[in-house]
Structure formats: structure tokens, C-alpha cells
Length: 232
Image 1: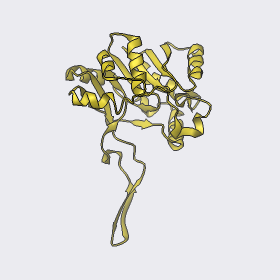
Image 2: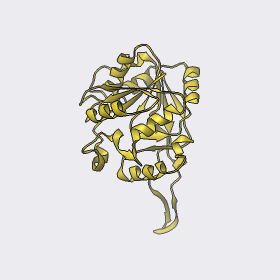
Image 3: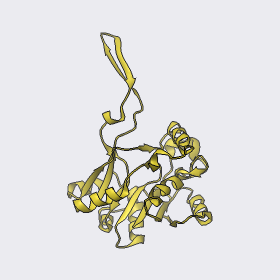
Image 4: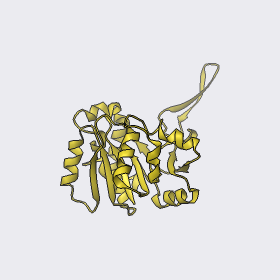
């Protein structure tokens, strides 16, 4: 199976790092987060990638051309202003009649891809999304009559479930995407829900996006360890 990686957005929420490079090329240690993401797939036997490029896509295209790796990588220009739905549609049309993995180019997790795929096949629907708990960003404060009675770190498990990427998509998902300027999250996904064709694979392990400079710094520290949490 191939894996689609969405890598064409502007990365405006991490503007400190994305003025001169696309967000997936932001470095964690000495390698871009895009490399770390492909390594998650590669270590589990998925080595064929289609990277959907857009903003400053030439940087990704040049990096792919120079990269020495065992992976088979195609950098596909999906347009500067195309949104996530349009990028996925262009990639699915490029790949053809194949089931694929797909994810965003700015989040890491120790997803068991075989378990994800098995779940998708058992469910028998057109798409499966990995549901994750959002990272705990704030402390939990309890008070009574103005007096703080408890202050603890918020537990990640206390939150609800959110879209963590790491999809499995059947080729006909492209029929649920009507135009380039369509977010996958507010376009195809709600349509798939209405059609009873979206499954949720609940992941309770590590997952971390890179939406802020603080999250980038946290991931960078993890990347320095011998076995980063997204690889075990």
C-alpha cells in the first residue's frame, strides 16, 4: 500500500518556522518532521509515498530528489491554494484504483498500521480515521468559594476524541470531494458520515501535532532520544 502525506499547507500557526519552508520541512533534531513521519510508516513496511505539495513545494521536491533512502517517494504538486480535500482527490486520481493510507504532514504517533488496516477491512467502510485524545495543554484547577482546592496537570485521557489523521481510504473516497478548494475535514468527512461510510480507529498511545513553537520544541527533544515515542 501507498501512503499519501499532505504537505502543501501554509503552516500559519507555526509562522516562526514556516516563512522560508513548508511546515513538514521544519527540523526535529537534524531531520524534517516529514522524514520522521515517513519513518513511522517505513518501519512498519509501508515504503511507497505520495507527498502532496503546494506552498514552497520546490523545497520538498528538491529534498526528495536528494534524499538517499529505501523509500519510493513521489512529490506531487497539488497546487498552491488547493485545500486538504482537493489534495487528497488529486493524489487518489494519481495513484489509481488502490486502497491507501493517508495523513497530515505535521503530526506524529505510534500508530499500529497493521491494526489500523485490519480494523478498516473488518468494518468494510470507505474510510477510517484514527481517533486520538488531544494533548493536555492546560492544568486542571478546582476551587470552592474562591479558594483553589486542587491544581494538577490535565490528563490527556480526560479530553474527547479528535481527528488524528492516519486514515485508510478506498479509491472511491475521491467521489466525495467535489473541488480543489474543499477541506477534507468539512467536506468529504461529513459526507462519508452521512453515508455511514466512515469508521473510527481509537488510538490510545502517543500522538502529538506540531501546531505551535512549543510543540515543535517538545518534539525536537523527543527526536534526540534513542527511541522516540512515535516509534515504540
